[in-house]
Amino acid sequence: MFNYLSLIFFAAGFVVPVKLHAQQFFSEKEIPALLAASRATHKMIFVDVYADWCGPCKEMDKTVFRDSTVLTFFKRGFYGKKLNKDSRYKDSLSRYLKTDNSGVPSFYFVDERGSVVLAGAGLKSADELIAMGHKALENRQLGISLHYWDSRYPYIKGNKDSLRLYMDRRKEAGFRNGRILQAYLKLFRPADYLRADLINTIIRNETELNGTGYRTISVAGNRHTATQLNKIPGIGYDMYKASLDIINDNAYRAYTTHDKVLLNKCMAENMRVMQNKGQAREVNAMILKKFKEGAK
Image (cartoon, rainbow, N blue to C red):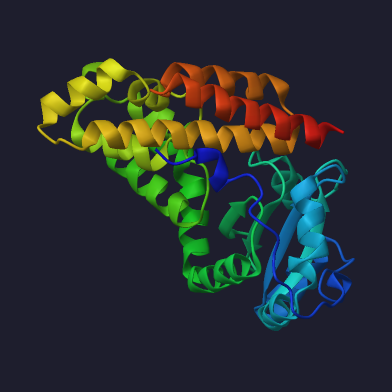
């Protein structure tokens, strides 16, 4: 089994051949003014949500956001804006973006209508951030679709097909789908949760430790039953791996939001879910160490 924490906690430093000032890209203008400029030029807005106490944010400011390749690419196709997670903003879009629960740093690509066409979070390399930029440009039409589905959500909560399509669109844009998955699963009997189609939907969309989907796939007995029921040998492992991925994702959120309650929950879930308890203790020690370092 690979070390799941190695996927999220601080890859080795970046190689940055040339450095520039990030201030050359990030604007002092507020989001409404940038939206007006976006409508005039059709350039999207790249938003970096950060916090003064965020270690990964500081790392990106020193490296990635001073990389000439990154800045050249983003200046050509985007306006840049930094939002401090601990600051107050008057406009609704800034308030929404800074209160999203993805942790910090979080990144949002916003079109001229104010729709997010791509979202992401966590420490990124220069290549990864540029790849996100390319994906955002490819997602231009997705903003129109998401705007439609967002407005329709209150009216489709009872429609399985519509909710599944809505989750697919949001997944394309990098959004967390745990809340919508919860509404989707309520339309089925609990006995149906171990069907292969629903398991795949859970694996694709679950993000929350308290979600019905996570509670379903993280139980060893359910994984065994699903394997027997569906006659798919690898489905139990897929459920197990997805469970660890969800714990891992929430551990990163706990670190980047200073959420000790969530951190403790993640460590408890590692001990419950991981088959190798010795490795679970090692992973928890790494999580706790990183959390304490970030709190200094």
